[in-house]
Amino acid sequence: MRKDLKIAMDEAKNNGSLLPVTELVDKFYGEVQGLGGNRWDTSSLIKRFRK
Image 1 (tube, rainbow, N blue to C red):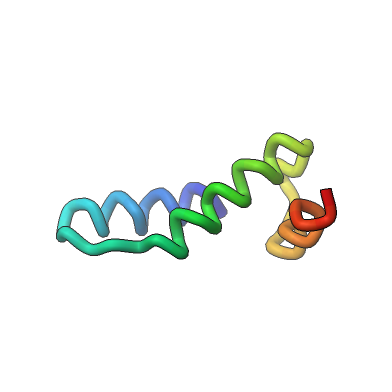
Image 2 (image 1 turned 90 degrees about the vertical axis):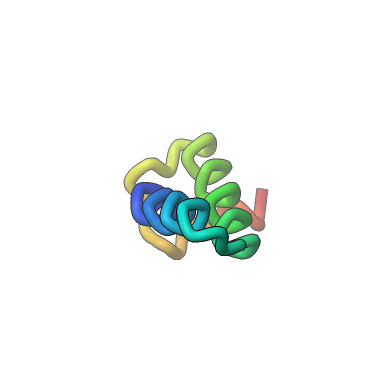
């Protein structure tokens, strides 16, 4: 998931677009990874909000 978000954010930088929500979601997934959720699916964000 983060790999795909990084591709989108890199392309946005290349063309001067802003993706603040995408950056925020990437940050949330980074926190999920910190909780041990490297292979969890999109529902893993719920665990992030419950921490």
